[in-house]
Amino acid sequence: MTGFFDDRETRSADQRAAENAQRLVRQVAHAKRQAPAYAAMLADLDPQEVTLAALPVTRKSDLIAAQAEAPPFGGFTALPLADVPRVFASPGPIHEPQGAGADPWRYARALHATGLRRGMLLHNCFAYHFTPAGMMLEEGARALGCPVFPAGPGNTESQARAAAHLKPACYSGTPDFLKSILEAGDALGLDLSSLRLGHVTGGAYLPALRQFYAARGLTVRQSYGTADLGLIAYESEAGEGLICDEDVLVEIVRPGTGDPLPEGEVGEVLVTTFCATYPLLRFATGDLSAVLPGASPCGRTNMRIKGWMGRADQAAKVRGMFVRPEQVAEVLRAHPGLGRARLVIGLDETRDTMLLRVETPVRDASLVQNLSATLQSVTRLRGTVELLEPGALPNDGKVIDDTRPA
Image 1 (tube, rainbow, N blue to C red):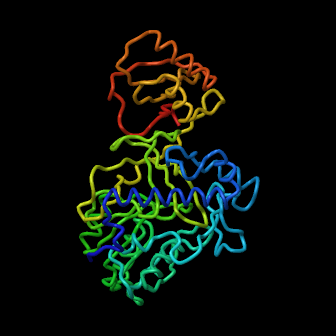
Image 2: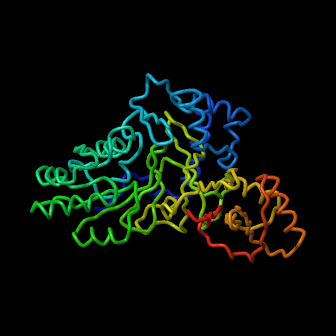
């Protein structure tokens, strides 16, 4: 299966940047005008002059607190509840509105890159209750003109029997559940040869699984998305990283901050969506990733990321108080010119310890003293400081390393 979903996938970098800059101005103005929470957050910002990096970061904790204060959506939506097609609830709890219109989560693009085409039946094994995953994939398939079997999760033997009867062309669900269905079909002597495509997300797509599907002649590609944002990035036939969706702006920032990181550095994924119903700006996913250099060999030209590389929300409780990545970032901001830093939490017999390891070419006892004082001022906890050569810390996005026994 070849071809692009639309010509936006092959735009030049300059054209995409110019068009996205105009869209950002409109989206910020729309959010400020229609969403009460953003009206307050953006009160002092002029949408015509704002840059992406100047916008405040929206965190899941902001949504949880705001929704508790002003249910159901905390003032982050631009439509009244009566105009929202569906409402969902994810762990947190966080409640999400479905956007208006066809394919509001934009999954048609990712399914098209997998090979799904008009008329093919999608066997959709994502859940349809509480969380929006099932509807996210269904709406994408319907936008492509594809019928959908809303199978949901579980009931492996029944899934295999249904697939043998309905003969779907494509599976959607978590990466490992398709393997379970195929193995159940083998045990029952069923013909599941119609399944030649798979689109997976919501879990780790490990190399052993890729090999299993490839050995059976299946093309199974993955995507990365969230209930709040919809599609963020997707895999193409090139199989080299995940290509960012054309209707979001993706940034990689230092965890706990909104400070952009250079290409290749592992950091937290921030996403700005152009959804009119739920105009989230610089939404912190809590996930780690990194930007890959260059464009995909498949011909799509948008930015690529490595995919999910762990969690960025690394808070730890030390001597009864929470320490968070944003506090480590605050310490670094007080001492410009430093490189990566990692706060190592340990245990000395029964007492929690903190060691701040910082990359810097400077070897100065006064810097150690000043960093120690800033660390105590910011966290209200005493800790020691170790200065390291630049590049000594791994490029894994980890800011807080809790080494205490579980």
